[in-house]
Image (cartoon, rainbow, N blue to C red; front, side):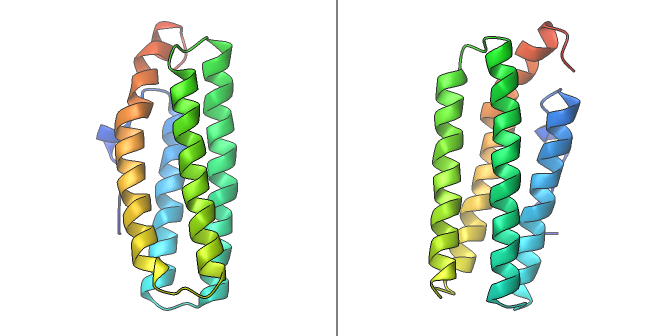
Length: 134
């Protein structure tokens, strides 16, 4: 396994922990596809799956943050938007036959998921837990 969700990534909100686990799974699937040379079409399909899942996950987090007036909603949304743009940029470059993007992409995704889930997302866990959201 390339990168792995563990309890240190838990944000204390079950549905988001489950979604984060799925994000780790998709990044690992992407890693397998790239390292095994499964082809541009397969890797591109996994990237598109990641874009779709990230979009769904970010929207879910942001809806709950808005519902409970999470004070860092604007900065958290901005961080989500930056990551979505990075992933879309990778997808565009990958689709344009820049095969070297694989390692850069995996490195950036792994750094992001570990720092975002283990950092920015941890900020909302306690906030939501205090409001009865687990």
